[in-house]
Image 1: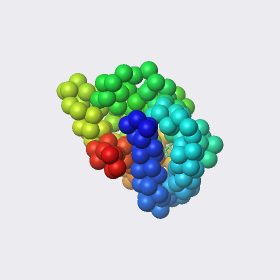
Image 2: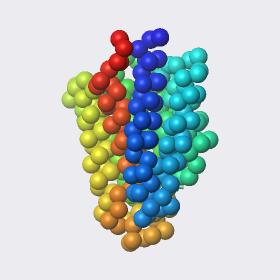
Image 3: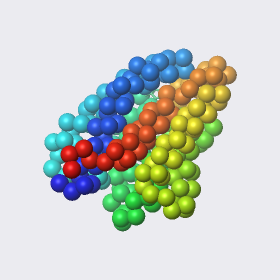
Amino acid sequence: MSDNEQLGIRIMRRIQNVIHANTAELDAFDRPIGDGDHGTNMDRGFTAVLPKIEAQPDQSLAAVFKTTAMTLISTVGGAAGPLYGTGFLRISTAIVDLDDDHPRQVAAALTAALGGVQARGKATTGEKTMVDALAAAVDAANVAVEEGVDTVTVLERAAAAARAGMEATIPMRATKGRASYLGERSIGHQDPGATSSYLIIQAVADVVRDGPVNT
Ligand code: ADP
Ligand code: MG
């Protein structure tokens, strides 16, 4: 197995672990401004992803992200399934076209994911959705790339920005998704999808920083 083949599996394992550990918290964020299922939805999706990517012959990053996308679309349900599915699918095609400039690949992958989520959900920043975390991550990654920092630093800056973007959803009034039905009453609550987006980007940063366990 090449490094990249192991990397895809390691990324999805870590995401699955983190989502699983935060299922109750993500459901709790979804309760006051939604229907309380975001963690359960995401946990069901990533739990279904693992056996599929472990069993498939092609474990390249592009193939792993593609299987992840298709599995999330068919198993997560709710708004987040098609949104994350489209985001991961766009990453799988972005990766195929890229060379070995890893910091730039990370920024391009994040940009592709944001583009997919926005194509599907039509949300922009300030609407109290996962876009607020993802767009902040993309901006930070692009700035980091221009500074010439390494891949781990690009990912860590992206994760820190996603966290800030997630926290910035608290005072926002939702204008997209289920939370928008609450109008002003959505103010004062952290968006669950922005929270899962932060957790996912942080998980990727942690995997790349920690490196392979057995090599
Ligand atoms: P549902 O709202 O169908 O129950 P989830 O609870 O799994 O689905 O996901 C809710 C999350 O989906 C929200 O917190 C928000 O971040 C995200 N979301 C909803 N609609 C949109 C949209 N149009 N664009 C981007 N993200 C959205
Ligand atoms: Mg929900």
